[in-house]
Amino acid sequence: MIKSYQGERKKKEKELSAKSVKVEDCMTKQLVTFKPDQLIHEVVGKLLEHNISGGPVVNENNEVVGIISEGDCLKEVQKGIYDNMPTLSDKVSDFMTTKVFSILPETNVFEAADLFLEKKIRRFPVIKDGKLLGQISQRDVMKAVFSMKSSTW
Image 1 (tube, helix red, strand yellow):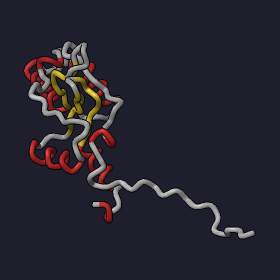
Image 2 (tube, rainbow, N blue to C red):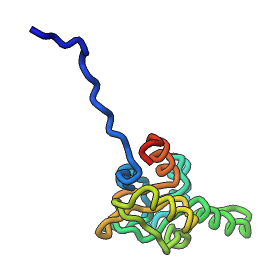
Image 3 (cartoon, one colour):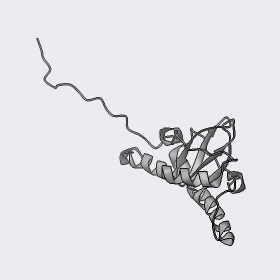
């Protein structure tokens, strides 16, 4: 009788490769979203509460109609200078960016990195069939690339 003394073998960890990592693998799926009729005051509160710098604005069908960011909220603050007190009482639809660049979930993370540099924006909503699936940020891409082994590039 022959016995093996090698012991239990560890299962190989699945190595991530540049070709295999897609946006859907590293995007954020639990998003803070906003509605066009929300007040800027509510948005500022949510941004601060969740320590985020912006988020997608969606309609009742979960379709992206805009993006609201800290910079957009600052426009409302600046408007309040004339009254000597920002009220933050205007609606998201008055300040959101409506020209939204989105990305597909099957996009490779390196292609996403190129798009971030080309468009000079910080986040892309991930949309498929017109519906919001998640969001990917520059940081999400950096985390994904950092987790790859250099031999898989």
